[in-house]
Image (cartoon, one colour):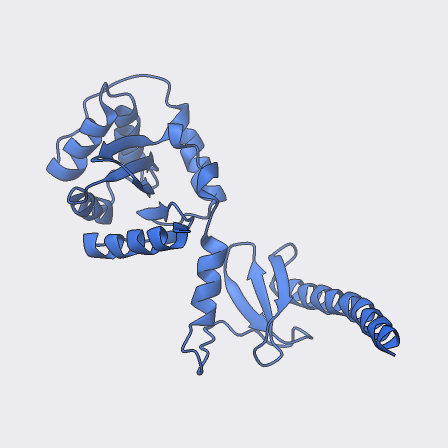
Length: 241
């Protein structure tokens, strides 16, 4: 009897799985007919209201039904757990494998034992990057990897390349970002800057500063030192056996 029940369960799973994929494909087709071709990156059914989560190729997250007859552009909040389901999913989608970052293309600074790690994408003319620099300067036992990411115009590009070509990149970056000392003109191979711009586009970095922590989480925008310390504590807790 148990074997028969097991066989029925296996058969049901086999039949349901293709149906689920078919529904997701139908949702993708319906959304792309409305939004445009090749705009949907992924579709999956979620446990809330029979909705389907749709991840667009620009990184945006929306919801629809099994026919794609409407689009919900907003957040789902679980009233039992109080969890912002949408934000949680956005964070998951935005996270990266930190080990894949080409750290050799970043300005590196080590303070204290350097055991806590941050990588940031920053434009030298970004006001919030300058404010962030002041906060980072107060932290100890950190390794900072600053990817020069000039997106605010020609002057940002010039400053980034001069900083990269400086004899002491970290000192020149800090002198500018903290004290406003214009980086002296310097020349070298600046292919790293071009590669950083391409990488930032691949990672869908639309503003500076954007920070990545060792667990892969992404934080877009300015953070104060206490907020950074909170994230460090969370990362440390995650990595404890």
